[in-house]
Length: 214
Ligand SMILES: *Cc1c(COP(=O)(O)O)cnc(C)c1O
Image (tube, rainbow, N blue to C red; front, side, top):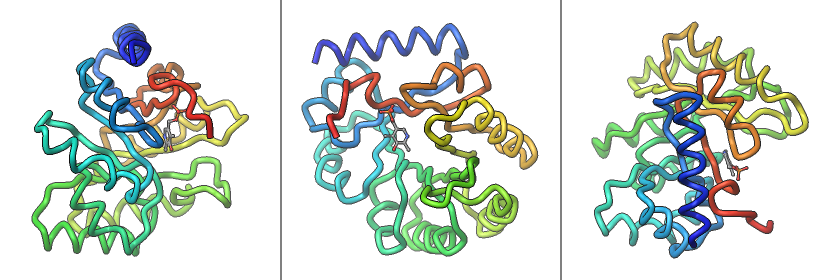
């Protein structure tokens, strides 16, 4: 647990050096509640999870403690999980198709809960990966705004084994084109590059909590 505190302060230092305003999202998927509390104890308040189901087993109890946590969903979202997701998360970073946008907008309207969204862009156009294809991104961004969604920014996961920076640049260019301020990009292996390109949010798991062993 001491390591978690040490790692967090290391990464905070890097953020200070490279981009003072970027937000660190601690990715706590597959981590247990004790590990999450260790990070909270070190002052971390912004967390990312990639599965709704797993999050429902861990987070409602923690949120009861009123630490003013901000919870981001960073993994793919099925339409039948939208109700649960809107109930639990503050930010949905994996909005990547129109039907999902419609469902999210409907649920936000029904509940009145304030949830902001990022459009996830498949910058490498990889068939197996989530995210809207680059060629369809303009349309989805415009559609989501028209639905009244709070589109805070864009998110991407570059292809493994490729230079991430080129993908971060693509995402930044697209965000600029649509006047979107937030850029969620960069993980344990490439968050420094992401910060240099202008990430406003980095999503870091293993560099905080250690290897997931999966
Ligand atoms: C797991 C995950 C991360 C964190 O990855 P690490 O390499 O552990 O830092 C970031 N973003 C998404 C979408 C993830 O699923």
